[in-house]
Length: 83
Image (tube, rainbow, N blue to C red; front, side, top):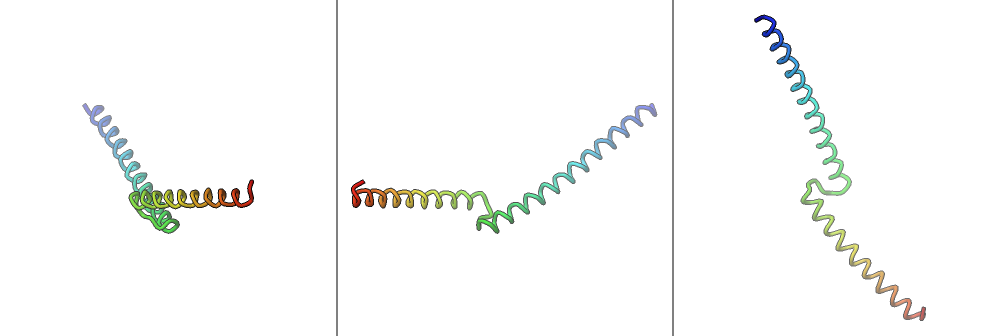
């Protein structure tokens, strides 16, 4: 019987070590996530996925407008200089 109890104790100690390591790893990852979100907010002005998606949509519209302006200006130049 003592052999069984020692094995159980040893197994439980192993599990506790794994749990402690998992908690430590989780806390490290959580800290890294917080730092990345702060960095993202500093660099882009957005701090959430929703804000980032909105910003991407705005930038996509801006790109579309600029591309339209470039196409229009190119056509105008092409017509003007008869290319």
